[in-house]
Length: 81
Image 1 (tube, rainbow, N blue to C red):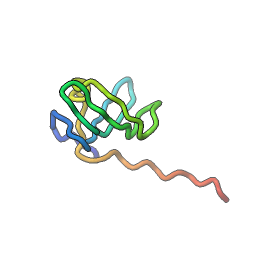
Image 2: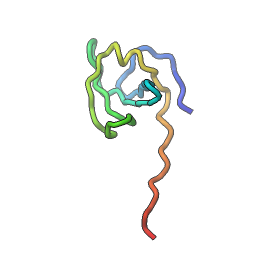
Image 3: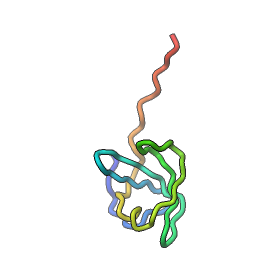
């Protein structure tokens, strides 16, 4: 289970989660400075996994920091047969 660990400052490698308008986005912190944080999309509506974004540090600090990765996605269904 993914749980909140209470950390305020997301460190590189940590996962952060944002829930808004009934959707969930999970990002991995790549690099953080005082004003901006570079993140990599793990899972987010409308964004491909692996895309890198620069976000305002205050917005990332407001996100939930996760202590473990997101639940595994179900395996892709094979269409061979």
